[in-house]
Image (tube, rainbow, N blue to C red):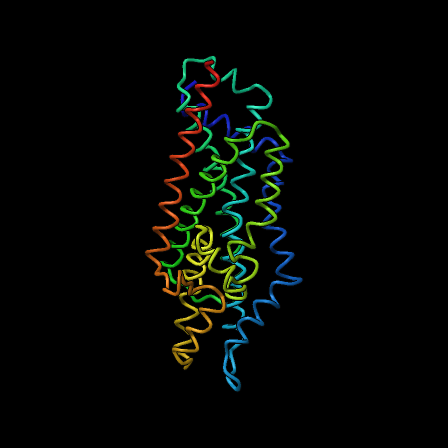
Length: 299
């Protein structure tokens, strides 16, 4: 059983498990419900608080700003939580003993681990790209200020975030030994990640101490990264219709497009570096965990 067969097997098993597949879609659905009942008003209030009194904003521009925040919130969280759902095949194989059947064949443990990683990544990308397409349709109907380059950059960034989410899930699930542990980790990630990465509530609205702590988490940079790209055209349009530059910067601050590490504004290239390096580090950690587990199995 080679790498291609292992990867294909893991992907097929994931999509055949309808309960597991629909569980992966819970995060986007929950975010949409939260948006309709709560988040939309929070985003509008956050946007309105940064606009000087007496300045009117066109409905299309307002909808594009709020919709862009929904877009980025959904993707920033889904790229991580969906990866954990897709990666449960690795946990199930350990618990059911299926991993023993796989390792009986003349295949290296590194190949098995790579098969899990790539299968999880592919499944996560498929679901997140579908969610991304739905968000594009939503913005096209409510307020579209993006060009072709923005769309390509968004898709590339979502791909990077899926790699980050997959590597994180491989590390944490690689440490689990029981279904209860895996379920606990998945529940904690699903419930808490959206808050600590600034997807549900802007980090700008948190206390200074909490903001400083969250700036050490790579997910914070991923959310801001996607948000900057999605709303680039919106901010450009604000400048075109006469918004003062300081007002635009204040709006960026209020919705976490501008984030600061120890008082220094973080640039977009720096955000890419943080997420990219974090992904590489998690992959290396997963390799180490896999080697340690293989040694235990041999003993």
